[in-house]
Length: 329
Image 1 (cartoon, rainbow, N blue to C red):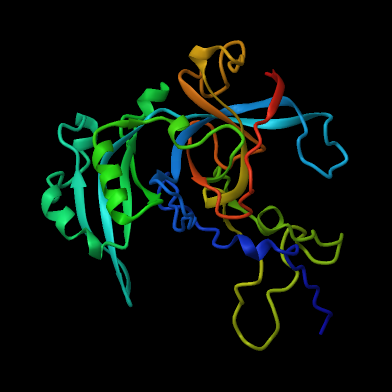
Image 2 (tube, rainbow, N blue to C red):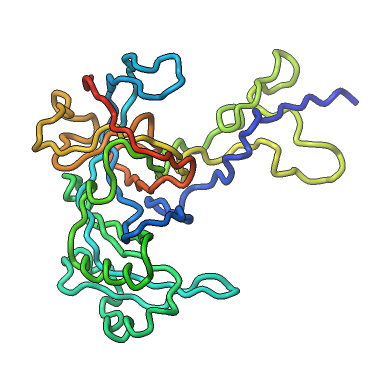
């Protein structure tokens, strides 16, 4: 019996399981930062990926070799149209977890939003306010309309955003005043803060173990195949373990990337930076209205929904405004 050659995946690749196709074009945010604000505040916003540019800035990271010098970095442009607060949802909590207790929706919602909501009547605000003490968490139900970013998609995205700060009574009053109103990106974030991005990655289709897991190709004449795994595992146990790299779906996965700094938060009407290249961004077009530029790359292809959440790790003690010298298109 010949020697079995083991081609194992590169170190750390199992951390990216699962590798199945995402169930929706909209990424879910399952955890929220526990921050103590004096006043209630929304913890997220959303937008659509437009393209990439280069940013020339002064490096303000202390105790680094490039501190105080010019730094050229990649920037991802995300168009952030206003979000519409269409309702709120309250959750109670017991030993079995969280449970939705009530829903409240705004009146006279746009047609494209009321069409996808099964029940917009919800509960009475006055009756809820009397029993607000048993509520553990409050979430804002928001809608973002792709057409406001000059995209062709008609159906809006509807999702929940956590509210933190103050007491539950303050949060309820805060959301009650926002019902039916629009929230802009500068009401949630500011330039210099760090956010987490949640999105669906670019789909690659069916891929083999070489590109999907990064295993090493076999040597010439070692086997009849080259781009296959050398061994599926030992004789016992008699099954293929999940750690063995196999072919399958690559891309179109839900992924969350942490600590993306907002380098620019502006509006095209301000003419603060020339953000649109000649002819517009490829596969997107021209950016109009509010936008942000994040440092580094962002998962997903162009025109895909990107959710921006307040960072949950490595929260800095102070916010430093970036010193942007130039934008290279």
